[in-house]
Length: 425
Image 1 (cartoon, rainbow, N blue to C red):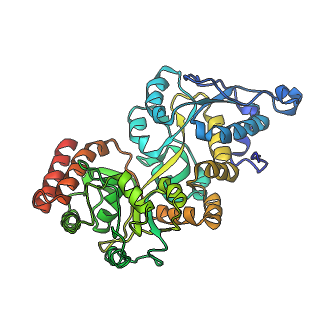
Image 2 (image 1 turned 45 degrees about the vertical axis):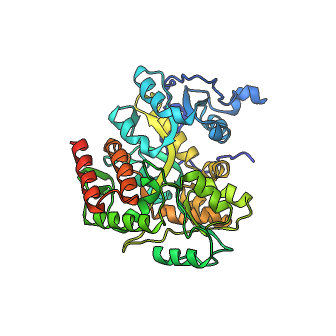
Image 3 (image 1 turned 60 degrees about the vertical axis):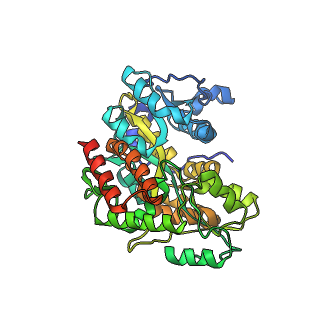
């Protein structure tokens, strides 16, 4: 059923059609626009909606196009502002946005991931969005994720993160700690007490990060507003050294194995060869199709602090070159940010919604989404600062070396921290 928007508009009188003398930012792209038809094409007279006053161009990927088409139709009916939807490949949107916005050929609005922000902001192609009181309607971690240098740059719509999958036949109860999980896994009689996919050369800092966080070793420290501080490199602290020693112990015990990559980990879990698997919602359908009764649990911590994974937050952001800022902000907050659209995006994407009202409803109806959502709201945003690019290669290679016993773990970790600091300088 198509969503409709009859609720009062939060931005009030600023958003009446008469306030706009607007033209589109530009709307280029390789695909044909799929915007909503004009009122007369819907069999309506031109007096059924306010007189059109410009248009918006929105870049959207194929998975979300239908939902946005419904929202666009309602927006035009309410405001007289047409919304031109241009389908783009999600993986190309960021770079295309960076290259086209400065020329005036980009869209007013685009869909994307919060960790693009560092690139978007430093290139001057994205504009802040004033959420106002609407910020309180979203899960806090999603607003934090779309914030950069104290300003908010997007309207979030989904949360994605890893959690612990559990085969309930092999492990009827959720473990409280990492050690308890391994004990339960060994007692199950399965081949592997626990699985996580690791790359032979680069391990997997993303999947191993919750364990690192449990030792109190974030990559970067944070400012008072929860944003990351690139000048506060924390990865080499005492907690990081403890994590390195733990990695070595798990590698020696065979619990972490760089010969078991993501495909093998998934295959073995789906074959019933392990009760526990650290992964994301993208691997749940295959496990269920294999006949596994899956539960989603919090990630058990080996250290004294919670095992917080990275969270990725998708959303829609505003071009710095948009000439339709008021209209675009209206569409972002009151339509994309509405419960109808947030719920519809969840239904096509299967990821927990960012809007609290839709988030609570999704968690109440789906235990899998509830499991990942509960972990995600206590997770930490993937750093969007450009400095994160200097971290990954050193980080992953060092994890592999430590797990494989290729040197003293603390010395390897300290060298990694020094290399990262040098790259940042």
